[in-house]
Image (tube, rainbow, N blue to C red; front, side, top):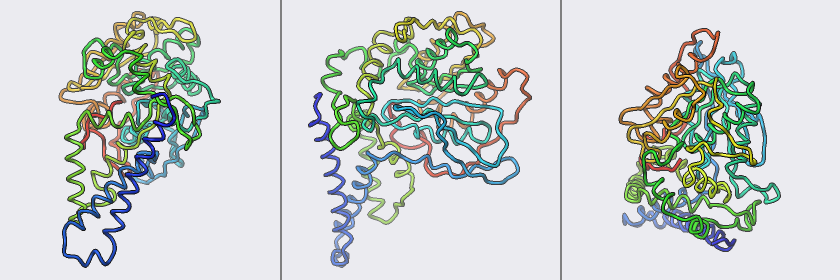
Length: 439
């Protein structure tokens, strides 16, 4: 399927579905049809509204939607998203709060590159803003990156993280969520050998596949059974003529979305059926729970083919991180070289994407780190989303992470941990239907 025609065919099908929804909505809105005492007309209009919105969201990057944050004195301050480091495949952004004193905790939140935008961590950012200066890796959609910018694989991803950490300096606390956990660990080890003074103070790894073989899930089983040739033949396409990245080989976001939905097809089908009937009864709204969740869930981005394939081959199949055999530009990266960065592991008991034990394997690799700088936490009853954006994160894990940061900030005074009070739209993933978004 390494052809542009297959990519353009998928985009054409999406466009057509969006048009059909818009047409049904428009037909159901005519005064003449309103005069018909037929509930089927209202159902058709509702179906069109839900369908048009759903297919439109698939090619739109969601907004961060964090207008204000309330600080200690009770005043509201605006939040500005500032680009700190700009690069072809991803930027380092800062959520700056003008008018308030800078926070002592400087946090780099490493977002996954696994089909969804960094805005998937919106609620995580919101919860950290009152207490921290928050920086996030904002990865770009591969379809918008010209082929002249070259490749982007797991080694390039690692070097991007190295550059971002160097830019922020040593007084930084890194939090990596799921997919980037092994590469963030590798980036820290790379700095430990190449530029020790640029290492972060702490590293928190949340639900990441450090050793996928430690506890099998559907994700790891898929990675073990499929061959690289099968993956390349069935998953990789070339960006079509509509986008700036025309000709670039990618794992298309629309194809990823189909896989996400198929993991819980019945749940999603029921959610959309219920929404159509709610809209038909006049009970739907632009920012109701369904729309708030699916506006984010359906917004997918293309991954470069080399990043997707090298992740499967080197992280899952070859277990290079788990075996401490990862290399960057031919140079071995020894995780045992990390001797001063405090490392904390967070896992969810019911995580069905990165099961308990996969992330915990990182501590065994840190042979040069004293036990006093190692910590781990298993959140009882929590699924994948709960440990970084759901109730478990807000109520238990967030305070735990902030205390870990404070405990490993030499000379820093005790800092109060406030309860987040941020005005923003949307709902927290993990609190709504559609739990299985691969991260």
